[in-house]
Image (cartoon, rainbow, N blue to C red):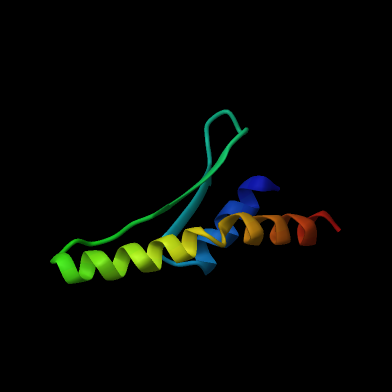
Length: 68
């Protein structure tokens, strides 16, 4: 079920990747950016941190929904 939640979140959140480690104990999220210049870096960091901030809440919501 955890793997299914990670896959669902990765599909829905686009640039954000959510995955479980090889021990199946830890869920991790990362945000990939393309660096072209300082302006894009600044914008990407703000967007990435904002998106990463919702991962825990979204994961719990998906987990609760799938547990029913």
